[in-house]
Length: 257
Image (cartoon, rainbow, N blue to C red; front, top):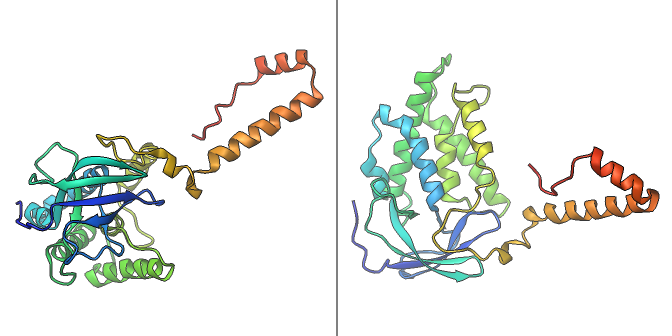
Protein backbone atom coordinates (compact mmCIF):
# COMPACT_ATOMS: atom_id res chain seq x y z
CA UNK A 1 0.00 0.00 0.00
CA UNK A 2 1.47 3.35 -1.05
CA UNK A 3 2.09 5.83 1.75
CA UNK A 4 2.10 9.61 1.72
CA UNK A 5 5.42 11.31 2.36
CA UNK A 6 5.48 14.68 0.59
CA UNK A 7 9.12 15.42 1.44
CA UNK A 8 10.46 12.09 0.17
CA UNK A 9 10.34 12.60 -3.60
CA UNK A 10 13.76 11.58 -4.90
CA UNK A 11 17.18 10.33 -3.94
CA UNK A 12 20.57 9.97 -5.59
CA UNK A 13 22.28 6.61 -5.13
CA UNK A 14 25.83 5.51 -5.83
CA UNK A 15 27.29 2.12 -6.60
CA UNK A 16 29.81 1.16 -3.92
CA UNK A 17 32.91 -0.99 -4.28
CA UNK A 18 30.91 -3.78 -2.63
CA UNK A 19 28.58 -3.71 -5.68
CA UNK A 20 25.70 -2.51 -3.48
CA UNK A 21 23.82 0.78 -3.82
CA UNK A 22 24.04 3.47 -1.13
CA UNK A 23 22.06 6.70 -0.79
CA UNK A 24 24.19 9.78 -1.41
CA UNK A 25 21.53 12.52 -1.43
CA UNK A 26 17.85 12.57 -0.53
CA UNK A 27 15.02 15.10 -0.83
CA UNK A 28 14.00 14.78 2.83
CA UNK A 29 17.29 15.83 4.43
CA UNK A 30 15.77 16.52 7.85
CA UNK A 31 14.40 13.07 8.70
CA UNK A 32 16.86 10.85 6.85
CA UNK A 33 20.42 10.23 8.04
CA UNK A 34 22.63 9.40 5.06
CA UNK A 35 25.37 7.76 7.14
CA UNK A 36 25.35 4.15 5.92
CA UNK A 37 21.89 4.48 4.36
CA UNK A 38 21.52 1.58 1.91
CA UNK A 39 18.92 0.86 -0.76
CA UNK A 40 17.99 -2.47 -2.36
CA UNK A 41 18.32 -2.62 -6.14
CA UNK A 42 15.75 -4.30 -8.46
CA UNK A 43 17.66 -7.56 -8.77
CA UNK A 44 18.03 -7.82 -4.99
CA UNK A 45 14.31 -7.08 -4.56
CA UNK A 46 13.51 -10.00 -6.89
CA UNK A 47 15.88 -12.27 -4.96
CA UNK A 48 14.30 -11.35 -1.63
CA UNK A 49 10.83 -12.05 -3.03
CA UNK A 50 12.05 -15.51 -4.07
CA UNK A 51 13.47 -16.14 -0.58
CA UNK A 52 10.16 -15.09 0.97
CA UNK A 53 8.20 -17.67 -1.04
CA UNK A 54 8.63 -20.58 1.45
CA UNK A 55 7.36 -18.35 4.28
CA UNK A 56 3.91 -18.04 2.70
CA UNK A 57 3.07 -21.47 4.13
CA UNK A 58 3.77 -20.11 7.62
CA UNK A 59 1.59 -17.01 7.47
CA UNK A 60 3.74 -14.46 5.65
CA UNK A 61 1.90 -11.13 5.39
CA UNK A 62 2.64 -9.26 2.11
CA UNK A 63 1.33 -5.99 3.57
CA UNK A 64 4.10 -6.02 6.18
CA UNK A 65 6.66 -6.36 3.39
CA UNK A 66 5.14 -3.54 1.32
CA UNK A 67 4.89 -1.22 4.33
CA UNK A 68 8.56 -1.71 5.17
CA UNK A 69 9.88 -0.01 2.02
CA UNK A 70 9.52 3.08 -0.14
CA UNK A 71 9.60 2.20 -3.84
CA UNK A 72 11.73 4.20 -6.27
CA UNK A 73 12.13 4.05 -10.05
CA UNK A 74 15.11 5.10 -12.15
CA UNK A 75 14.91 8.69 -13.35
CA UNK A 76 18.35 9.66 -14.66
CA UNK A 77 21.87 8.32 -15.01
CA UNK A 78 24.18 10.94 -13.53
CA UNK A 79 27.43 9.18 -14.46
CA UNK A 80 30.31 8.29 -12.16
CA UNK A 81 28.34 5.33 -10.83
CA UNK A 82 25.43 7.51 -9.66
CA UNK A 83 21.72 7.27 -10.53
CA UNK A 84 18.83 9.55 -9.63
CA UNK A 85 15.67 7.81 -8.42
CA UNK A 86 12.16 9.19 -8.00
CA UNK A 87 9.32 7.91 -5.83
CA UNK A 88 6.99 5.32 -7.31
CA UNK A 89 3.47 4.64 -6.10
CA UNK A 90 3.64 1.07 -7.42
CA UNK A 91 3.93 -1.80 -4.99
CA UNK A 92 6.99 -4.03 -5.05
CA UNK A 93 4.98 -7.24 -5.28
CA UNK A 94 2.41 -6.18 -7.88
CA UNK A 95 4.50 -4.60 -10.64
CA UNK A 96 6.84 -5.78 -13.36
CA UNK A 97 8.75 -2.49 -13.30
CA UNK A 98 12.26 -2.61 -11.88
CA UNK A 99 12.06 -0.76 -8.58
CA UNK A 100 14.56 0.10 -5.88
CA UNK A 101 13.41 -0.36 -2.27
CA UNK A 102 14.41 2.06 0.50
CA UNK A 103 13.77 0.63 3.98
CA UNK A 104 11.59 2.73 6.27
CA UNK A 105 14.03 3.01 9.16
CA UNK A 106 12.98 6.38 10.55
CA UNK A 107 12.08 4.50 13.74
CA UNK A 108 14.63 1.72 14.13
CA UNK A 109 12.90 0.02 17.05
CA UNK A 110 9.20 0.00 16.20
CA UNK A 111 8.91 1.22 12.62
CA UNK A 112 7.59 -0.70 9.58
CA UNK A 113 11.01 -2.08 8.65
CA UNK A 114 11.62 -3.32 12.19
CA UNK A 115 8.21 -5.03 12.08
CA UNK A 116 9.19 -6.71 8.81
CA UNK A 117 12.47 -8.00 10.29
CA UNK A 118 10.64 -9.40 13.32
CA UNK A 119 8.01 -10.98 11.06
CA UNK A 120 10.42 -12.85 8.77
CA UNK A 121 12.65 -13.86 11.70
CA UNK A 122 9.76 -15.56 13.48
CA UNK A 123 8.60 -17.29 10.31
CA UNK A 124 12.13 -18.49 9.50
CA UNK A 125 12.34 -20.10 12.93
CA UNK A 126 9.02 -21.86 12.34
CA UNK A 127 10.21 -23.14 8.98
CA UNK A 128 13.49 -24.45 10.41
CA UNK A 129 11.82 -26.20 13.34
CA UNK A 130 9.37 -27.79 10.93
CA UNK A 131 12.06 -28.87 8.45
CA UNK A 132 14.92 -30.01 10.72
CA UNK A 133 14.74 -32.56 13.54
CA UNK A 134 16.45 -30.60 16.32
CA UNK A 135 16.98 -32.21 19.70
CA UNK A 136 15.62 -28.99 21.14
CA UNK A 137 13.55 -26.48 19.17
CA UNK A 138 15.41 -23.53 17.72
CA UNK A 139 14.54 -20.19 19.29
CA UNK A 140 14.31 -16.67 17.94
CA UNK A 141 16.99 -15.57 20.42
CA UNK A 142 19.50 -17.95 18.80
CA UNK A 143 18.89 -16.54 15.33
CA UNK A 144 19.04 -12.93 16.53
CA UNK A 145 22.22 -13.54 18.52
CA UNK A 146 24.06 -15.02 15.55
CA UNK A 147 22.90 -12.32 13.14
CA UNK A 148 23.78 -9.62 15.67
CA UNK A 149 27.29 -11.03 16.15
CA UNK A 150 27.93 -10.92 12.40
CA UNK A 151 26.69 -7.34 12.18
CA UNK A 152 28.83 -6.28 15.14
CA UNK A 153 31.90 -7.72 13.43
CA UNK A 154 31.12 -5.61 10.38
CA UNK A 155 30.80 -2.47 12.49
CA UNK A 156 34.08 -3.21 14.25
CA UNK A 157 35.74 -3.48 10.84
CA UNK A 158 34.23 -0.13 9.86
CA UNK A 159 31.78 -1.58 7.33
CA UNK A 160 28.12 -0.58 7.21
CA UNK A 161 25.67 -3.48 6.97
CA UNK A 162 23.63 -3.27 3.78
CA UNK A 163 19.88 -3.86 4.02
CA UNK A 164 20.03 -6.70 1.50
CA UNK A 165 22.73 -8.42 3.58
CA UNK A 166 20.64 -8.11 6.74
CA UNK A 167 17.49 -9.52 5.14
CA UNK A 168 19.14 -12.35 3.22
CA UNK A 169 21.09 -13.39 6.33
CA UNK A 170 17.75 -14.03 8.07
CA UNK A 171 16.04 -15.71 5.11
CA UNK A 172 19.08 -17.95 4.48
CA UNK A 173 19.78 -18.69 8.15
CA UNK A 174 20.48 -22.28 9.14
CA UNK A 175 22.24 -23.20 12.42
CA UNK A 176 25.81 -24.41 12.11
CA UNK A 177 26.00 -28.15 11.50
CA UNK A 178 22.60 -28.37 9.81
CA UNK A 179 21.31 -27.86 6.29
CA UNK A 180 18.02 -27.81 4.41
CA UNK A 181 17.30 -30.13 1.51
CA UNK A 182 17.25 -27.25 -0.99
CA UNK A 183 20.58 -25.71 0.10
CA UNK A 184 22.56 -27.44 -2.68
CA UNK A 185 20.12 -26.19 -5.33
CA UNK A 186 20.38 -22.64 -3.96
CA UNK A 187 24.19 -22.78 -4.12
CA UNK A 188 24.10 -23.92 -7.75
CA UNK A 189 21.68 -21.10 -8.58
CA UNK A 190 23.97 -18.55 -6.89
CA UNK A 191 26.93 -19.81 -8.93
CA UNK A 192 24.94 -19.37 -12.14
CA UNK A 193 24.22 -15.73 -11.21
CA UNK A 194 27.79 -14.85 -10.21
CA UNK A 195 28.30 -12.72 -13.35
CA UNK A 196 25.05 -10.80 -12.82
CA UNK A 197 26.48 -8.41 -10.23
CA UNK A 198 24.95 -5.19 -11.51
CA UNK A 199 21.18 -4.74 -11.79
CA UNK A 200 19.77 -4.65 -15.31
CA UNK A 201 19.01 -0.94 -15.30
CA UNK A 202 17.20 1.00 -18.00
CA UNK A 203 20.07 3.50 -18.07
CA UNK A 204 23.75 2.63 -18.60
CA UNK A 205 26.12 2.68 -15.66
CA UNK A 206 29.50 4.36 -16.18
CA UNK A 207 31.84 1.39 -15.77
CA UNK A 208 34.98 3.57 -15.83
CA UNK A 209 34.46 4.37 -12.16
CA UNK A 210 34.46 0.65 -11.32
CA UNK A 211 37.75 -0.21 -13.02
CA UNK A 212 39.78 0.97 -10.03
CA UNK A 213 37.95 -1.38 -7.65
CA UNK A 214 40.43 -3.76 -6.01
CA UNK A 215 38.01 -6.67 -6.48
CA UNK A 216 38.03 -6.25 -10.25
CA UNK A 217 41.77 -6.06 -10.98
CA UNK A 218 42.36 -9.74 -11.59
CA UNK A 219 41.67 -9.26 -15.31
CA UNK A 220 44.71 -7.01 -15.58
CA UNK A 221 46.84 -9.58 -13.75
CA UNK A 222 45.77 -12.30 -16.16
CA UNK A 223 46.61 -10.13 -19.17
CA UNK A 224 50.07 -9.42 -17.76
CA UNK A 225 50.64 -13.14 -17.18
CA UNK A 226 49.54 -13.89 -20.75
CA UNK A 227 51.94 -11.28 -22.11
CA UNK A 228 54.80 -12.72 -20.04
CA UNK A 229 53.99 -16.22 -21.28
CA UNK A 230 53.94 -15.06 -24.89
CA UNK A 231 57.22 -13.16 -24.49
CA UNK A 232 58.87 -16.19 -22.87
CA UNK A 233 57.76 -18.53 -25.64
CA UNK A 234 59.02 -16.13 -28.27
CA UNK A 235 62.58 -16.26 -26.93
CA UNK A 236 62.85 -20.07 -26.86
CA UNK A 237 60.85 -21.27 -29.87
CA UNK A 238 61.12 -20.55 -33.58
CA UNK A 239 58.13 -19.73 -35.81
CA UNK A 240 57.54 -23.38 -36.82
CA UNK A 241 57.43 -24.50 -33.19
CA UNK A 242 54.96 -21.75 -32.35
CA UNK A 243 52.72 -22.78 -35.22
CA UNK A 244 52.77 -26.41 -34.06
CA UNK A 245 51.98 -25.42 -30.47
CA UNK A 246 49.04 -23.28 -31.56
CA UNK A 247 47.55 -26.25 -33.37
CA UNK A 248 47.99 -28.56 -30.39
CA UNK A 249 46.96 -26.31 -27.51
CA UNK A 250 43.62 -24.45 -27.17
CA UNK A 251 43.71 -20.66 -26.94
CA UNK A 252 43.15 -18.99 -23.57
CA UNK A 253 40.36 -16.50 -23.52
CA UNK A 254 41.95 -14.39 -20.77
CA UNK A 255 38.69 -14.57 -18.74
CA UNK A 256 38.03 -16.59 -15.63
CA UNK A 257 35.11 -18.95 -15.64
